[in-house]
Picture 1: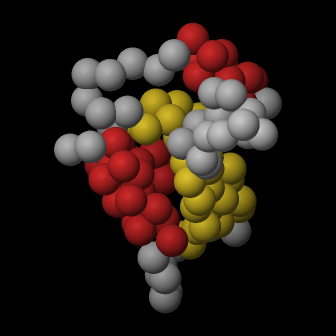
Picture 2: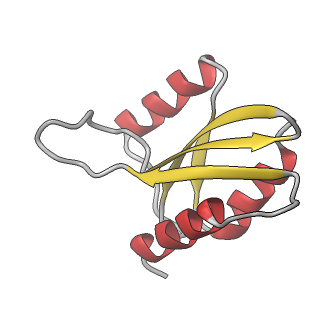
Length: 102
């Protein structure tokens, strides 16, 4: 599966309306360009679960591909600030991350 297809599935999953569920969220895709911050994760999201808000930073890769050094450095920086951040290769990994938010 292509990276863009994984990103679309993640955005659709997080942005899907959830009536009566324990969480809801809003996610967006970062697009690189001349004026963007180099190495920012592909998907950023805010998830509200059980009365708490969480900020997610997800670098999306095809299975077998690895993040660049700058991507790894930014993920570490976000994690040091208490943000849920990491590399994902499938929608299943994102579902697990959201299920484990506390």
